[in-house]
Length: 319
Image (tube, rainbow, N blue to C red; front, top):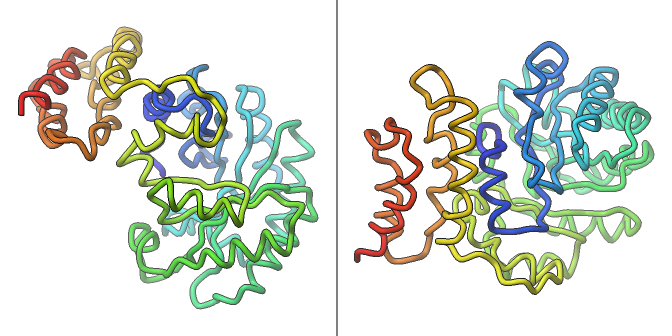
């Protein structure tokens, strides 16, 4: 979810669900150790619980980066062993790390030794043509010996050559049974399944076999799906915000961010940097297209007036 689940996206999603765990976009160790740390790690206090997702393959660098994440107040450190992009492969991390389970175990141990918060791993069920269950079982078993207790299983193979990241999310077949078998074989571990999950009914089905479910693209494109999660999965019976109330709740945040960072013309924050994450809010409702069109008006976005959000809601209601 690089360039997708940034702090503005997470702040928007937090208006919809109070308890669902959020994960940052992947941040590389190089970006933290040699770049602008506040740019990559700053977030809003309202986002908790929020996990920092790291990309890297050097135990010492990951330990230092995990320590930074803990110092900044993140609730969990997650190591990405599932991203198949060529850019990530060139850095020798992401999904290609699944071929080196002992290295991943060393990375996990180094991070666990450096921090007092949970260290988790997100991974695929195989790479390229390696699709035996034994491959992912042995990977999880080796990494678990280093102290990792939570594995987020994207239930597809990662094809490292020949498929784009988008194709890697769609072409390799989903094999949820591999995640289910992991829970059976490692009952003491927390197993969370990910990949292609779009409805509450699907979530409920998976929860009969594993401990948790992670949503990615569906949560982004249809975010109001999460409005029922607090009551359904966390026992919080407080009424969720309506879609219109979510828009209203975002206005003070947007105004504050624009005031703090400028409004684009001078190289500061653009209104679209926040509102682009909100395009799917009305998915499934009559007039959703009018809402998206209004929120995508280039002239009004350039003007930087947050009232554009209210105009978008009004246009949607016009019928």
